[in-house]
Length: 482
Image 1 (tube, one colour):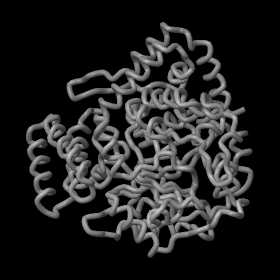
Image 2 (cartoon, rainbow, N blue to C red):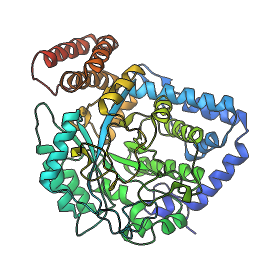
Image 3 (tube, one colour):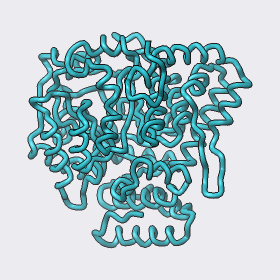
Image 4 (spheres, one colour):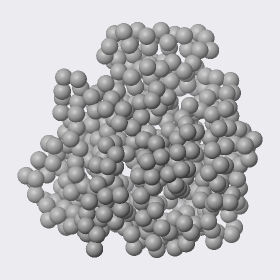
């Protein structure tokens, strides 16, 4: 039996089954221990300092106690603190991105994904570099600046060289006022050498969903293919960081296994990265199992309802206060709306989850990885965010100024991120409004920009941002950043 050790580099020691089970038992024993819960909530709450706010975060045991508690008054407090933390460190900004599917060729047998090798009726497709370019132009014409590229695992059809060529193509496309300024990468676990190549290619965040931290379930859900190797997959983030990638993104696919187990494993993984590398995950994604080509979510008996999903998201925000939390178009407008106030800081917009989907006039369904619940256009999503009091941000400044990994986290932790990110968000929103927005969205946006400029704390920063926004409106000058 392996012992729990967050500093270990062995999967079964930093994600330790015995420790998770002990954590769940502890949480169950203490879920009505109001005195303990109040202490945990007080620890999670942002504390004001001379320079801004700090947050202690929570251990996997503390966070699991909150998740287990079903007292409505406590849940409301969890939600209040989640919103406090989100506003303290990310303000009212919501970063926008889109997924770009490069290839659905895959050699794995994952039972929850339609790309699995045994699915013979899904059309297999891989974009050529010309097709990648066409997809990028379509995304730029929508107004996107940040992409997350996706591909199945197939060493013959999707080798690392193909991924690198696609990244190079994406960064090379300059169409009208459009540029993709940050490419995040969601591809299968790979070697330190390949992570170095991705780093050298200028990627933003390396994203890899664990799917499930429960080893027995993991092996059953991934019966064949290289992804079957639980340890190799779970230890991928350590190899990525060894390869020089300091922004990594975690995630589980909620609904595959009991959610309390997954939650504890996810927080333990974040603790492990902090303990070993001095910096936790840049992002945490919270996808749920959804219907797809030959996948029926009802086949998985661990599905979670919307209320539980909201509670999980809020507890992640309390446990890992500085991470970005991502919610995709898997979720409906109603669910996304609720989660925005509970800690979510990034959303996708106008997404298509099929290979080559952006150049099609109507949304293709035959190669979709999952059904898209929120099918609104990017313009509609931008307008909705603004009308809800959120600033849609297309900013990629920190990545391009070298503020990644521990440098980004230190900026976030001392509260100074609002002096950079707030004006950057307003300037990139102004670009969107000028170049891509409908008249009504532009009207709503210009009003918001004027109002939000006044909230920039430093007068000098405020005046520079105001002048830059004037230049965006009066010329083709773009890409201002602090």
